Image (cartoon, rainbow, N blue to C red; front, side, top):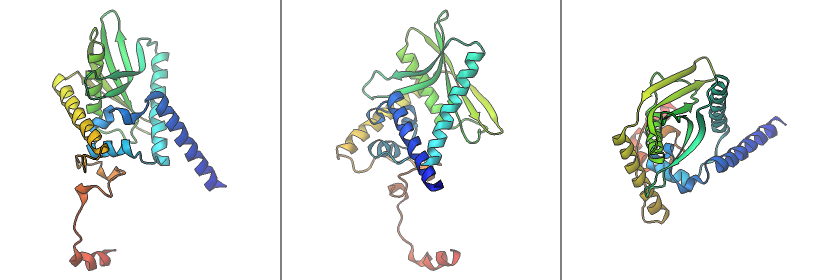
Length: 242
């Protein structure tokens, strides 16, 4: 009874996550999102061609992120803010299909300015924002400025929400950086070219980037970056340690 209930809950969450992704993000295999560009190219490409099955823990983490956005939106509304938009979609106008969905965009019609707020819901709030968070924000600000040239994108911030003891923490002071933005667009173009070549069978292996998150990659086990020859003389030592 309990095992069946857990399986039912996980299947329902998977179905709900899939439906929500299709409705809000569309077919992610047809474009590069902000998180795709900051990740290892191999992981990004394989995830689009062979989406890994989402486990219960990951599903719950995703729901936690959506809950954080809802909590912040409610707080802004109660506080009397009326000048923000949620889930604003911005697209790059060039060849690389880059699309970002911005959690919150604050608009001043009188001053013709915009500001971006990205909400994160980590298990633990770091002392300093993760590089992937900052990469995503810089890309968002750049895309927003390109999409709305009649406005000036003044600033951006990251709000980390923790449902445990840490509460919330705001990382702010970010402003659009054209050089960083152009570098991210160039990176996106290279990843997309590799994606198309790999999909067509013209590329044997996408580019790989080893980093601190490799241990969480669903495609780690057959990653060429971690291939090694068996050292037989260590077999006995390993058996003793085991």
